[in-house]
Length: 280
Ligand code: NAP
Image 1 (tube, protein in one colour):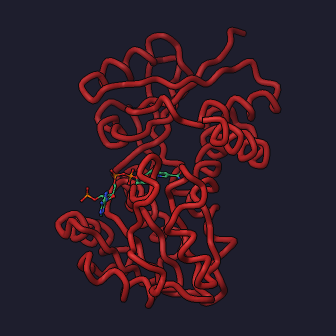
Image 2 (tube, rainbow, N blue to C red):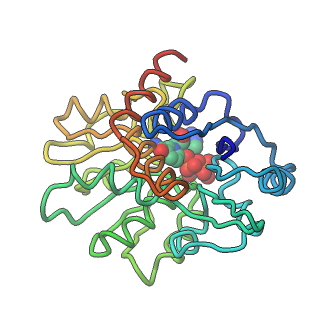
Image 3 (cartoon, rainbow, N blue to C red):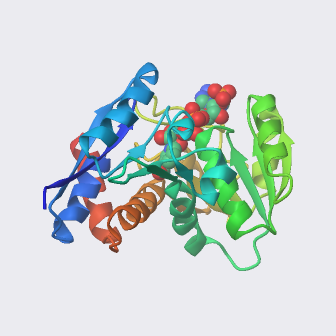
């Protein structure tokens, strides 16, 4: 059988650690398969997806800014894709059909659920972009009892999320200026903005750590760097901190399962991603 090939399409994608992470999994699983990074500009998304399919790719991950743009190009969408309105994993079939999945959702839940204390009820999600959408979808599926405060500088986007999840989740929308109070009142606080991401590592969604406290779980979805200012401030206040790499690994494990049917080694994938981050 010919070598199977996979990849990640996005822009920018040059610095993605996914090739190192997924190729490490393929190696442990002894698969004759390779995973590459494809830089795809927004105007080339349709050509790229059709080209990957025509050339015999087995699957791709889809990242910023294409997670919504690929939806009209696929033959089938999973229920999670419909709920989130975004896909991060495509599976190409030999007959030319394409399935869309969203493994960010289960990946995020796997990364955060072991850290959550029994009886937690409130979450603050900072940001209203694609990552926030994956978090809200996971909460709707796995923790529909919880109360979610969405804090965003763009109130229109936050209100859109509130409407989209109204049937499944209790969501309140908060002004950017009120984020300290919303975070302080939450058992779980997730930074789903790109603030603090390399190279602007001094960026942070809060000016100081006064909103964080012991007993709280605080996560940053940014994973470059692994220890962001957001996490540093939360750690100093005694909060339990979770970095963004667990979500990346979780979505990767789920994508490999969809593509190959095999259980990928999360520990090996995390170690490969950490090495790739250090070597950047
Ligand atoms: P996105 O769709 O572009 O959304 C970014 C969000 O951040 C938007 O709500 C945006 O607000 C907000 N934002 C950006 N700069 C801001 C600022 N200066 N002040 C306030 N808000 C600001 O991107 P995304 O896909 O959601 O990704 C967000 C972050 O999560 C990125 O760093 C990405 O790398 C990370 N991520 C990590 C994983 C993982 O596996 N760990 C998965 C997905 C994403 P506006 O809409 O007003 O611009």
